[in-house]
Image (cartoon, rainbow, N blue to C red):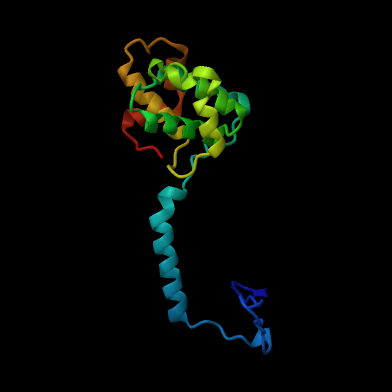
Length: 188
């Protein structure tokens, strides 16, 4: 039963019996203001602490499938695999792709990028596919998305001397991301 911002649930006990509501629901008194204020304060504390974790970069969510693929391909074209002992980085790239392309498109991009790493060629031997195995288990936590993929791209670009003059460079210069990166604005 719900009314206003308050509610009452009645149901069965775990082992036997049941909860029974007695009285008129319209006669339930309002909670005292001191209790409501404590509840509001606790709500603010919890949501303030968790706000960074709950934020999602929505600049990419409304883009078409083709645009998302183009963004991912552009980023992956300059992000190099890191070789031995880089499983965490490999997982993060997969999670970044999975955030906006949680289908076969994202998996295919991750597979193509992963296969460029010569130090992990044995992982692909005999028809094995480490990306498909990991993709099937999903990615949770980490807060990684396309914003993180673009940030990793920017790190790679700062290292890559032959970046200027490319199509990706001209796209990057026109984007709002470029001005924010150059100004040192932290990204989610």
